[in-house]
Length: 422
Image (cartoon, helix red, strand yellow):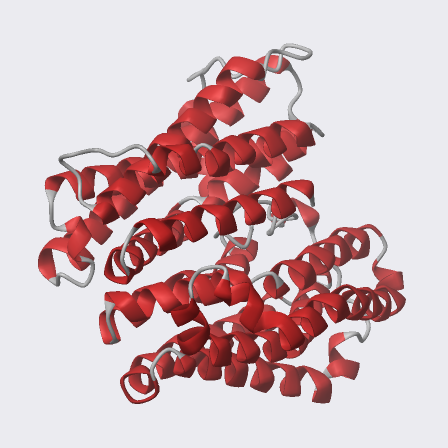
């Protein structure tokens, strides 16, 4: 919770400074590229990191612990490297959807940033598995905090957008260095790599990360794809307005996933209590959302004005739509947690996947006619349709549990690194 709060605040500060230091085209271009970084890492590497929650408690000794951590790092580096290279080739060189990736400098920083952030996720899940939340907190503070002074250092041979990307890349790399230097060794658990039995550990990973991982990917991917869609269908300037507004509105999309993750863990421990747990989660989410919703409805224009008056003119309607969408988003998140804990992965996958396709697909066609407010409408409508289905199917959703094999459910903490700064 502390990591989410502090990194969100640091993210707001970073983009607020960028909004005042660079023009809107620069900020929009950088926002689209950094969103593509997070989407690439999410698709390519988060499963390997989340698998550590399942693997590490099973380790028989310190040697096996190091081997499993090494396997997760290797997979994250390889998949992030391949995934980022594909994105550079498709969205940069081939289609020029993200022109920042057409240059060798931009492409190289993009690939490095993806790899650094992917390995950072491994360290975050490792910290959770080891009950060392301060490691996660410190790494994310370094990753998000060091960006701020770096963006203020002028680099003569870089464009404004590349300066923002350079700050992201260097800060992500320094956060890894921080963990390596401070992690130490407890009971022989160190970060010294061990490649023994690497092949067998890689095979085990391939069989254990798919089901829960895809549910998490579908839940989070829209937030990373929409800035890219806005950039492709509208303009860099429109992306700047959209990204800042979405970042502010995404505070609502942190609360209900966090409570739903707790529901997943508690429900897995005692499936017979799933009905009262689900009701309790809805009450908790409602209580936690009430304050931010009121603040945004009454003072959203004042928050946007911190980034510039033009952000109020272009982003206020979008921010209000995102605020209203907090309600159906909370309903669907709780429902997905119940479906996961009762082993109905296909239903959870269809719910998240359907909302993702409806949102991103419709946004592609709507944006040229509505501007960035269309993305908010598509998000609200897709979440509302999902929530309507949940309401009508609620008795079925919280019905008799079918049982779940936790050995096949590695992603117990799907929102461990989610923040309003993406």
